Length: 288
Image 1 (cartoon, one colour):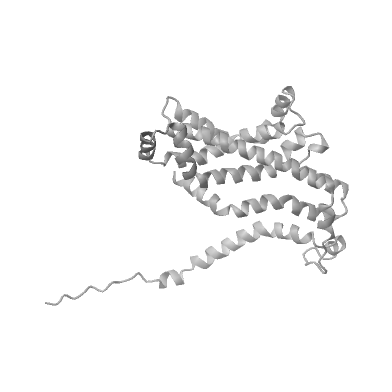
Image 2 (tube, rainbow, N blue to C red; image 1 turned 30 degrees about the vertical axis):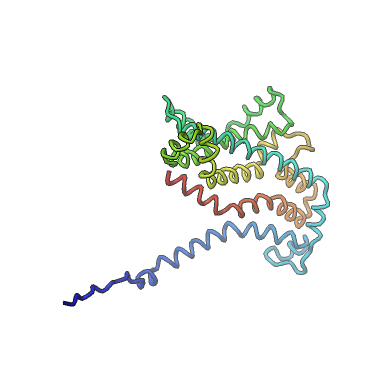
């Protein structure tokens, strides 16, 4: 007896190929990417032009390409001092955000106690609080603590305002770790801290990279808070340096574009290199 085999029917891809939504999706994606990238490209390329070139043809390409603007900014002593100040503040903020955020999220995810959800809601409400609304009382508080004109005056408020988002991203990752792993770690003699160090931290690496990069970029680009609490010129960060350079050389448009390009370059590279980890971390937070 022969049995006729049922033909396997694969789903036709004709509908997908002719779907009008695919070109529209690509067009929208390219439009959004163009709106986001065009200003950055314009600033970077503008640094390779001279001011007369920019005045004559604002949308043109460098002809010839000029490197003097970038060389002049890199030879400026204030640029390197402001880069050092930005690096200290951004790295200090990132370290404290990751450490404190991980500790808070671990307790909210793996410990059971009365008021846990209320405490988590308190953290999430922090996302709704605009930092600009608290700038004046924050300044008075920092002045009473004698922290004005110090790195702490920028780092500590930035950590406080970054913790709500950090906890919201990290908690779903830590909650998704199976309890069997914690039980197995306990059988091997690991306590809560051992479980956190050996298992929870490695498994949460995408989320940790995400919150670290977000905290670093936000701190690197911060302007209002450093402007209010860093009156000492020697403590100025790069965003304040861009403002000072613009005021000092207001007619040197090409030089200002070169300074702006170099000021945003570290944050841009940092974000680009960690892009995949950021997407993974945000996806995990949404699934959680």
